[in-house]
Image: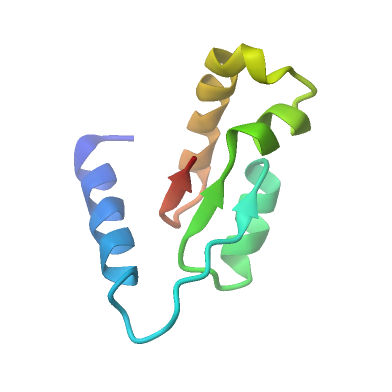
Length: 83
């Protein structure tokens, strides 16, 4: 993802915190769940390193592998909050 697209998503995410509606961040654990949540109308999606690790059947000690997998969130057009 290029820097302009990342900056645009970051600005969208910031605006959601100050919008008229409560910001709910459902947690996705893979690309399919992120896409489903996006199609359901969620304007932003959260992720967890543990959720990604468990979905890939890897130990949390392998966090660098989890970090590499987080690139798959670029497949979603919604901003995401990776924790």
